[in-house]
Amino acid sequence: MQNIVENIAATVAAGTGFPALVEVDPDLPDCYRWLAASTPELDRLLLQAGAVLLRGLPLQDAEDFRRAVAAMAPELRDYSGGTSPRSQVADGVYTSTEYPKHLEIPLHNEMSYASRWPQRLYFFCNTPPDSGGETPVADSRKILATMPADIVSEFERRRLMYVRNLASAESRYNSWTKVFLTGDKARVEAYCRGMDIGFEWQANGGLRISEIRPALRTHPVTGELVWFNQVHLFHASNTPLASNLGAQIESGLPMAAYYGDGGRIVNDTLATVREVMRGARTLFRWQKGDLLVVDNILAAHGRMPFDGQRQILVAMS
Image (cartoon, rainbow, N blue to C red; front, side, top):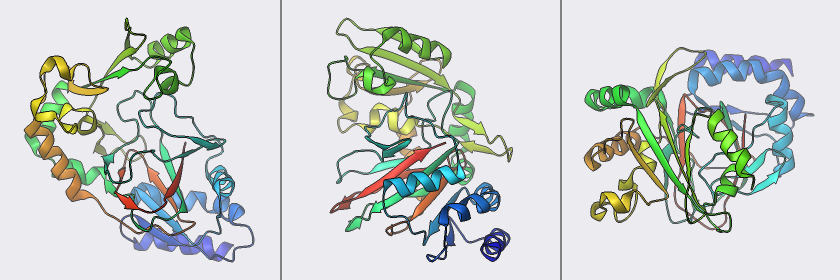
């Protein structure tokens, strides 16, 4: 046990790239005890690298994953207020975004549109895809350093507004009940007030919400300033018909993004943002049992298209 912890400390000192790879002895007598004992060193490595890939743990299913995460983070959070369709498979454990396999999910920091977000994300490879299906990661510090200065200054000065049109309670997709994990309107309104979310109930039973947030954030431990937003995902230019959308149609989309003062962000600006983020990403091939730990402020993540079956589970703390 002690030797393995010392090896992790050595990995921190040596640096192992991005994400930082820690190869674990698969014959550990108690991998959960090992994770608990190694957490301080893993925490230090995570603050340095932003993302850590643990490979070799004898994890076989969702319950193993839940126990592994519990050893590192006793308190998990739910997905209330989230934008992605997911299914809960265990206490605090969800499927990763259930999105058509032929489509890419661009890089993003989880719930960066909200006033509160997960500090850490844990991804577990239960079923590796036949091909593709990588979870790309990117260093949010490097994204900021590479982003054109004029975009950074404009975003920082004006901030960003995220708008979501949630469907009625009866809808099978994007209903406000699924987003807020309750059918109680009073609880939803209380949540919105507590999270600084503007809300307006619609005549069709839907709910329109808006959130004005910074485009950059400072890491609470390292003090580093990072690129931390989802404007490129919310913006109308992320839809297939983006070039033909008028302002009236745009306002009815499930998601939209503007400057914090309500001004429109031109498509060319978002094209540049996406180009910078694509250039920052790193890909690795999933293996059964892999456990990826991501500092949600220091690193962005996404998903590549894939073939075959794929199940990557996620937990948040």
